[in-house]
Image 1 (cartoon, chains in turn brown, blue):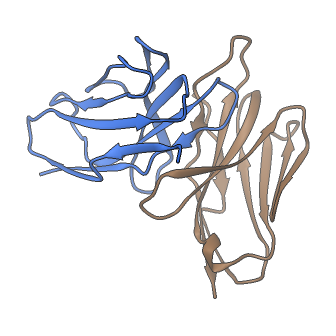
Image 2: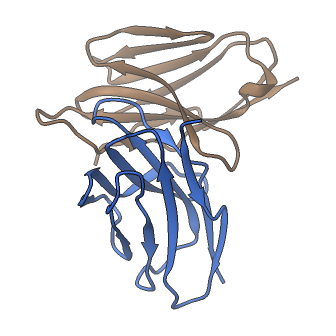
Length: 114
Length: 112
């Protein structure tokens, strides 16, 4: 099954800096989703971007999608220590009959240093 | 407050035992999911259920079983046939196939 792959695997930045994470995938998608996971906890849904959208914003988060390159990026602006977490992209494959098979990448581990 | 609860938070199992992980949601969601997460890995789908009394195998269903007798509940049984069950197990739910998932806090299962 297709899988999103995040890059980099780990990222360490100073508080106040911007953090950019990338996700690449292999086949056509209906939508792409980003999730956050704090250590030892469940995942939290951040943003869903559909295949016909190019950019979405939510607070300090900005997600872009380039379907021609099969890639997406998540930008966190003005990072805070509380943003320290792992971030996962998940791809919802294109299919005519709706899909419940969301496929997750291995994640980017973000550390924000106070 | 609406949400998903999983219990227990930590579970220890001896070799050869079956164990059942609980997942309950009060979000009135039709669809529920079970994922397995290993260290440094993404989530892998074990089973999912689109509606009560129906469920489908995911990518790694071998050694696991589920039931969906009530809309609110989707318990996962890890059987003795699962050769390497030590992992973090996450339950999720949503309404529809094209929307984000709500996740529970997870159960960490360790085989002794």
